[in-house]
Figure (cartoon, rainbow, N blue to C red):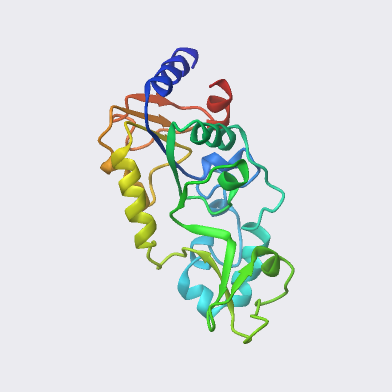
Length: 239
């Protein structure tokens, strides 16, 4: 890994504008389980498969069961930013990184100090009333029982998380495309590149260097200029 790390370090130093595109692997080293690994959420046993529970239809039909799973598995309030989160925030402060584009919903990039974070799948930290639109902090969800209700109108609260069957936010997608197009280096980290349309964003990159850091092989390994099959925290710590 040492030689490739050195190549990555040189590419980062040379780059004027970096964009980072990340997935679940960025947060696993902070104690947040991913979805598709052997010990991820998709391979644990519940009354319903996680894909079903985390769908819009299931949320509307079985909100109590949804929230039982959601509080248990999706709210990791003890998680802290790791080396990857911290290094990306440092690059942004230095003016080298123009945006973090993330599939994660945990808010750890912001906790590390990143300001320009484009959350493709939303965030567990934001919630709203489906009836009156009132904002609700994550603590309201965490400290409630059953289906959380709006204190103003009694409407059901919904996390600002993109569930299966729901569309991604057009404004977030457009800004992600713009940042990717303007970057001369793109680092992809901790993602299997299997979830669309988010994974399709990388095809908008027209810069000089595409680096891919993921524990396992991905469909785009052959296209990347640098490939490291390592844990992203280890790679960013070495940087």
